[in-house]
Amino acid sequence: NAGVTQTPKFQVLKTGQSMTLQCAQDMNHEYMSWYRQDPGMGLRLIHYSVGAGITDQGEVPNGYNVSRSTTEDFPLRLLSAAPSQTSVYFCASSSTGARGDLRVRQYFGPGTRLTVT
Amino acid sequence: GESVGLHLPTLSVQEGDNSIINCAYSNSASDYFIWYKQESGKGPQFIIDIRSNMDKRQGQRVTVLLNKTVKHLSLQIAATQPGDSAVYFCAENRANSGYALNFGKGTSLLVTP
Image 1 (tube, rainbow over the protein chains, first blue to last red):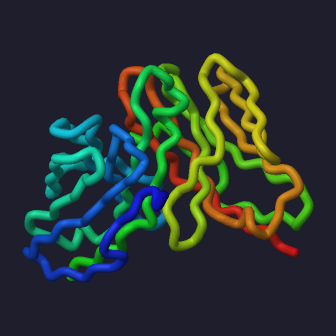
Image 2 (spheres, rainbow over the protein chains, first blue to last red):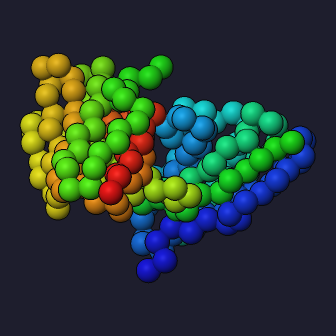
């Protein structure tokens, strides 16, 4: 299994440009999420999904859109990039169900480092 | 606001010694506490979790202790190795928040020979 994959690894955007960060997982996980990590900070939840067709907002959703048309893929869209969105973005996935220990064992991708100038 | 925090931003230990990384939390509604390890340039990797109804859990070379009285969590790494050098994050999952994890800022562990 490849686990959680993210593309691209690095991206530079100009203010106002749009782009999509790709995330895919091959573990048949229902739960997927996007976090951003800023220097010296922990990870902050942007959006998440508990299954195909279901998405919801996390702690810092402004400026980002998501959709979930398949179990495997969970892309993150930046509609109009701003310098404040310069960050490292991580996608994560985990199993769903009644077992809480499986829920919190989230598998993270390698990250996308985004710079907005 | 921040409800999961770490006592020290950096920790330096000698190879072979035991490491203890501490974390404080403020929310009594937390259901699970989790430790993640993040190596440079990589995504966080799950290490161990503990449910709020437990006070100790052991894994391979790691032990997590939970003190609910003082709302304190610690990760102990036995016989620390150079490969343990990384940033360690504690995170909490609250019973009513579904799958969302609330992360602390992280402690950087440096293992010296």
